[in-house]
Length: 229
Ligand code: CA
Image 1 (cartoon, rainbow, N blue to C red):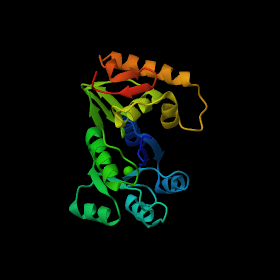
Image 2: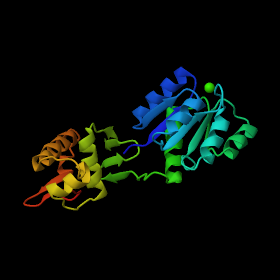
Image 3: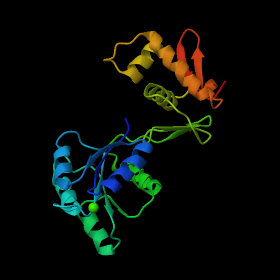
Image 4: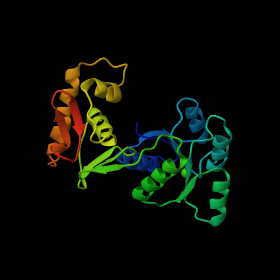
């Protein structure tokens, strides 16, 4: 569910810095040190966005960007160029080659994350969902971050998906079976009781922020998320 980014950067230290910052922001990361390596990786699973260094050994970032934008399968994958250069000419060359945005080193991880989110939203290539805020609880489907009045709420992956489903359908009551279908998927065989276990974990995580009342039991029916008592 989180967006996958392909980082193409030959400098190990920068790649490490990027993967640390971006994984921390909730993105899934794939890394390539050269354009050739990145090209080979595109043959498998397409990323949601490519972060591309301008200066690469072998094929340059700009050449690679052109190749991506020419590829029938890859042309819709947005690209953000990373560069040490700030000249207007380079910017234009980069955007001409098909890059969707351009960021000059050094940049703050925060700025980079904001630019990535903006490009992902604009591209619409992936079902990027808007963040939601209800009852003081905020959830961001891009970064998978959940916060309660600004404080991070730590959730397991299932609890996160449950909460996202609830918040996207606030005030709606779901039976255990409906939750199993929507949150776990049809192919998974789990008992109804599993739902209760994860609801309990979700409430426990929320209770640390005094927000467990948001996940409500509806007797005889199931569960719902609501700001109302
Ligand atoms: Ca480089």
